[in-house]
Image (tube, rainbow, N blue to C red; front, side, top):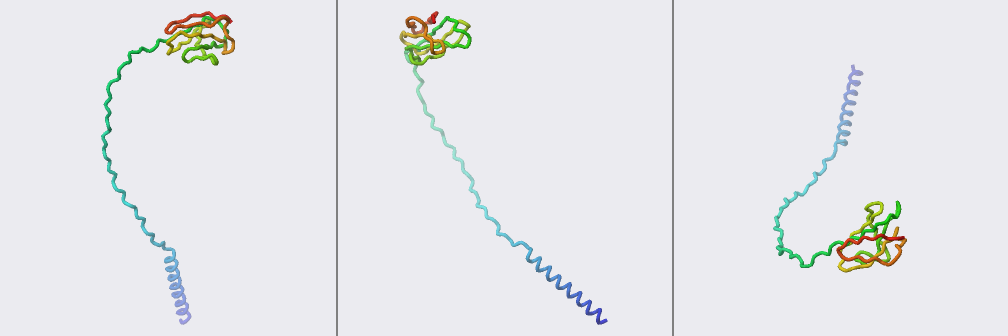
Length: 152
């Protein structure tokens, strides 16, 4: 029986060694405790109601001057499909160096409204802002519809 007792003792010893090894491994694998993060407490935000400054103003007085009525120029001419009639002149918003396109109303009628005209002014119409109408400059009066039939 000595042989079985020695063998049994060896088995018991091996089991004890294994248990000790398992405990060491388990001890190594156990995660270290991390320090808890401290979160700063946020102070409550106090809302302060502010009164908006109210500025009182006197009602605006209407000026004695009346706005100048629109001056309209109507050109009765058929310049062909795909062309545009331009206006050049000495009135407010016009110049002699660059034309302003007129609005096509019908096949043979073009018009433009000019605001802010207070005195009579000279003007001419051009096809595609290149070809001037023949003859002298035309004259338009403020607040009046001026009808012309230009010749090119």
